[in-house]
Image (cartoon, rainbow, N blue to C red; front, top):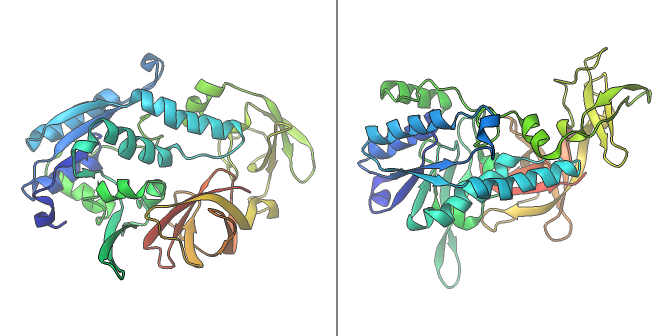
Length: 366
């Protein structure tokens, strides 16, 4: 970070109480900056029903803000989350798709609803995402302009560009990722050295903002259960009953609960409410090498090249592929090798061949 570029900027930090956003405050404070901190409050509609860690999160955030003399304000985005992110999620799973609530949470809440409520008063919004940005000078006949790119973190395990691949260009313009150039271990070391209260907190494993709430409980709360047959793909034999197709994802192998396993989810028939499973992790039907994506969202208006790398889930690996343009916003992906667990509704995140710059993402429509 260039302190001269930041010293006259009004900076808001989204402070969650976790170690990453806590180190963000430290990184800005050590440059002599005093950002305003904001804790986004979002919880279940009936909080007493679920084990939520929001109270502890707020305590941690309050302590970190106080340590560096920063103002902390709580911003309530509860209604926006449940009206927008939850609606998106439930509409997708009801249709038999595999959505990613965290992707839409970044666009609709962290850089969306928060911006509408408080972020519009600030030049930059800093978060604890593991991502980086870079600017490119674009030459034209009339003038030169800067193009901002979303770029990957050096930590392949923690990189979160896939969760940011649906944000808009104006949101990226205001985004600041002060720890994006670090490895996670380095962030932990900084937190320990500076005696941050959140230094030893475990990383969140659940859905964004929902703390310890289990994803299946989140789904069950809104869609309930819809039992149906579980059928072995190769034999057509019924081996049990599922409680709802929306509790299962293509490629899933854990938590099936059927005897004679292990079983792997390879197909969902939404019309007949049938879940198809297989003993083998490698049945041919579990892999796709060519698949379409639609509604491709370009973060900064730049369209991807023919040769790319991609992700279809949050993993350290970037998969090489060729991109074939179809109609507006639609592409056919031709991966260099078959990919396991390609599921409709997943976001296919597109990077350059060096998996450095992220172009954006589109929804898989297999």
